[in-house]
Image (cartoon, rainbow, N blue to C red; front, side, top):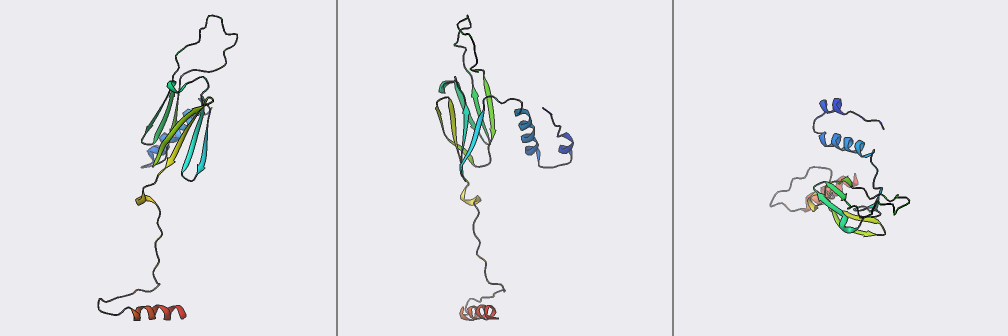
Length: 164
């Protein structure tokens, strides 16, 4: 795997530190692919991360959500004896830590474990103040409305412009 050095780009950019940190962490994570995972987009604002954690129980896994980072950690005590009872050991129960960068306003809604798969439900909740809103467009010309003047002449002027 090839490693990239983003140092020259850091020197010539301002305010993109988080972007370069994201690229560097993504580059590091490509080398470790345990445990495997899927990310599903269920709707515009709902997502599901599914990790294959065979051999781990709910008590062996810790899920931590901080501001824009979701961390899933698995630690299993060595319960299997290595005294010759196994002919082949192929189920990986090594400790792991998987990190996911979350976008702004994404929160963890629930986690469920079934059949060796850990499912984490995510919801994006944008505050009302941040949601896009439709802005009405008034007529093309400038209007001056005086406090005592009736509103009919303004309406008539707009109708005259529309007819022209």
